[in-house]
Amino acid sequence: MTQNTILIPSYQPNSRLPALVRDLYDDGFRHILVVDDGSEESYQSLFGISVAWGATVIHHEENRGKGAALKTGMAKARELFPNDPGIITADADGQHLPKDIRRVSEQLCREPDSLVLGVRDFDQENVPWKSRFGNKITRTFFRLTSGHALKDTQTGLRGIPSALVPKMLEIEGDRYEYEMHVLEDLAGSVPFAEVPIETVYEDRNSGSHFRPVADSARVYSRPLKFMVSSLSSSVLDIFLYWILLLILPFELALSITLATVIARTISGVVNYLINNYWCFKSKGRLRSSGLRYGILFLTQMGLSAALVTLVTKALSNAVVAKMLVDSLLFFFSYQAQKHWVFREKEGAHGKRTEALA
Image (cartoon, rainbow, N blue to C red):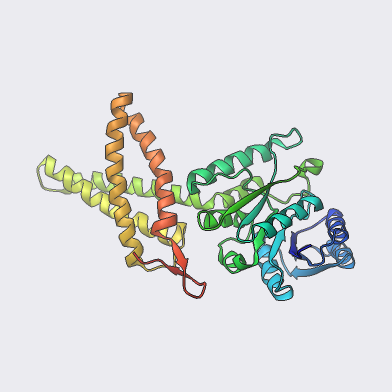
């Protein structure tokens, strides 16, 4: 069997963790790495048992989040097992069975350039309704914002090629949002391979530390930030338009034209700056991304005018037409800004650099 590193992030685990380590060791895996993400002293005996069953355990002094634990583990795996072709991440709460971990490992060996995802069947009766609903919402969001369809965007069972680890360590996020950011950042540049796995929810997933409200907000943070940015810019646009109509000393037709152009330009610049520094946290040059944003801005404005006109003719309702068109353009704009306006590309030595216009 080709040896891949098994990486298990863990926080306040139960007896399933050492049992998983034992089963993996019995199944032939020898490079098992557990990251204790700041668990309390009362849980340390379980990590000790895991060491006895063949795992290497790394400790965070305080809880830093699943994303941080995964990054710590991947960095350590490169140091301890530099010749392993890949890393298999698995959860410590019993959701991932050793046979499925092996299947993902074998698939990674067959597709060494792909990110391998162990996908669950959320239509089974044993799946808690919040997990079923959450996955459907998340994968719909992912499809609309990335253009790629996946069956399970929340799976923690993943096969990561070793060559991909440096890029994985650069991806933003320290908590549950990290795994979604990985999919968002790699979509289109790295192939995804999906492997069906058994759907396990023991005790209605009571071992999970996922907080439905706070952690869901983190998972959807990028689209939500983009939405806030878009709405804020729209309000600013309307406010400036109203003020300018009051103060411009020209005839109405000319005042409307100037007010529209000035308000839209200022709100567009504000929207660009918010998206650059807050939504996408771009590290590229403002000149290049600003030029691309300007092209997108004008293109989207033209598309909006043309599509609203066409849809209005079909629906005979300009307001509904505007709402439908702008909703579609929202997702178009998100993808365009993420993958083109603020995109980064690989430099000559593997570092991510801002792409030139």
